[in-house]
Length: 321
Image 1 (tube, rainbow, N blue to C red):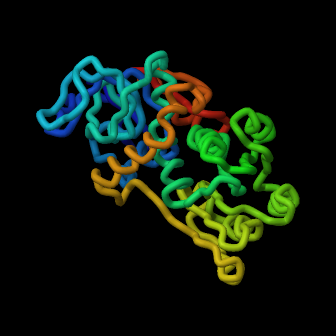
Image 2 (cartoon, rainbow, N blue to C red):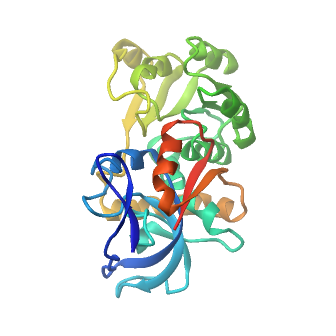
């Protein structure tokens, strides 16, 4: 089968062996692939996100089940599914059945591919790790990404009183209110923490989903409320930076790191179950959706990756095998 694999110069299309499902796996004919930031590193050989040399990269897709392992429950050939699982840049992929979700009636493969990682990551960050309570002030950084757009919507649906989204692009920032942001700020503007404090009546943020880290972390703490929580899920602004320990202590802030890379399959299955309990009715009703920025054939995966690297997209970039 054709698949996108890593090379020193980024993703290349190669002929690889079709995967074989394990007893708890689904074998899926891939219909649409959603790109994520981690794919850019995986494409150059970074194996920290589940990829391995010579194997298809990628982590988010939709498709049709063609075979099920002997220990699989609740799925059968012909089911339409969306998955958060490695190896998506390919004509066929496998997923543990506990990482797959049946696509709701009326939803196409392309829209379905945009949802799994954002739903699982942002529910876990906002609700499980972040302990969001109705009536709180919430910020989602990097909010013009597919994951960020889902975060804005989930925060509102779960009862946030005031939601802030960030983007450094004027046009993308202007669109954040379409997806639930009450305020959109530019983290390159040195006054953005002041804007957040003014908009919240001086109370600050109870919860931030931090996709930036780097030099923004101390600014984020400057507009965090007493006993606020910051949940780190990304490091787009840098892996290391100065940290204002006094602000952290003075505000008694919980700074929480989360990742799927060190979770067991049992952990991931539990995350999915919790997410579905809170959000699946909203997914089926179309209250959570992500705009598709651009679509490429799988054969042009490198062009899709380069488009993501320019950081000019709003929502998701897709590949179609």
